[in-house]
Image 1 (tube, rainbow, N blue to C red):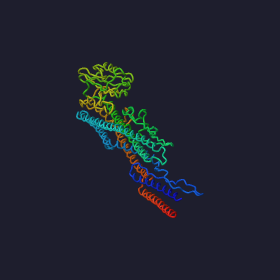
Image 2: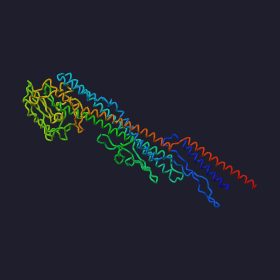
Image 3: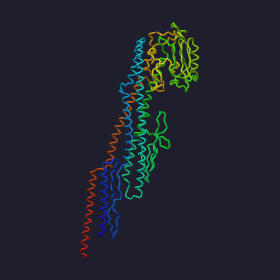
Length: 574
């Protein structure tokens, strides 16, 4: 029985030592990121039945368990993904703040106001060439403002796209780490009787949390210990010791490539739902692309609508020659889908008039000659034929498909009444050239001389153009608050479109900031909950250390006492 006591006390010494080792491990990792508190699971040994009595045989450490809450862990994965997503979006939006300026009065809105104000001033004094110079200057400022805004947005879009490559590289490294750690865990736990590979599991969990900051993921552990990592939509990223890599896919409609599973070409479903990678995709493909589209819509509506008016306008100084600034496939219908003119699809059945004047300024015939356009049928060659039938006019199409209209020597002409959109679509007697923000510029004639800016119209009955006529200038001024839609968007005025753009940006910034703040608070709360469950409390560990120390001392005392008893017994024998 004395030897039994020694064996029991010895088992206690070993168990308390192991428990103190666990406490020591906890304290040494108090500041290790992702570390989960471990607890020695102490159990009594199987009792032995002697002389009808069930006598205990001591104590043993059955396992060392890490204390975790899977629900909190999954919540942290979701939070890490969303916090990183909104932080990325908010940071990207903040980087283009200077593009939009004040939300109440953007640089674009101011430039647009100045553009229309210059037309108002010209309408008030249409014979003042100084006002024409002012219109040209304000128009140039507006064009520059639109171009600079778009270029800055495209620069940020391009930088964001470059950063996606870095995120893909980092995500692939983390996926490889997850696979490597899973192999190590399986190797260490195979045949183990003492417990799990706790530290390696903590490292894998931390790696998965780091990955969640890049891409929304979820982890699945099966009953047989198999570990699987997926995106939130079920795309397999890693299973046991095998990782699948991310890569760039094919170029999408916005000229940027998607994110795919390497080797398969399959896109990562809803990769833009979370993580910094998702935030960059959202910023690149939705937010910035949306602003660029809105800018292009403003430009397109401005270009075509102003050209609709200016193409049919005239000054007392008539035209002697004019050349279209958009080319055509001369034999195809003007509105054929193969035509490259950006507004060719706006051609409709109608007509425009050409008024021919002799050297004395007398129109022949009075009221001009109608040139008919039939949508789906009339080609540029047909227009040339119709124009050449007008006395005093010669027309031709050059090798690039541009239409030239020329008056005979000593004669001149004017254009008016275009309800077919031919003059605006092919930029004849135009004010602007181009079809979007990137291609927008002043017409070649107006760049050469501000006197090419027209303010009046040829009278439909007499063909007369009056020196003080400002009807075209007033019509262009009215476009500021006229609902327009030349690009398939909802009808809206140019003023409302610029307001909508700055409002959209302001709303996006507010939402991203609110979500970032909310997710930050949530992250703090979840980390506090995790620390409460899994964190190392040094005070508690010191208490446990004292408890195990005392138990160790008591077990040692049993050994010394038993030794004294054994000495006494041996003394009796001697």
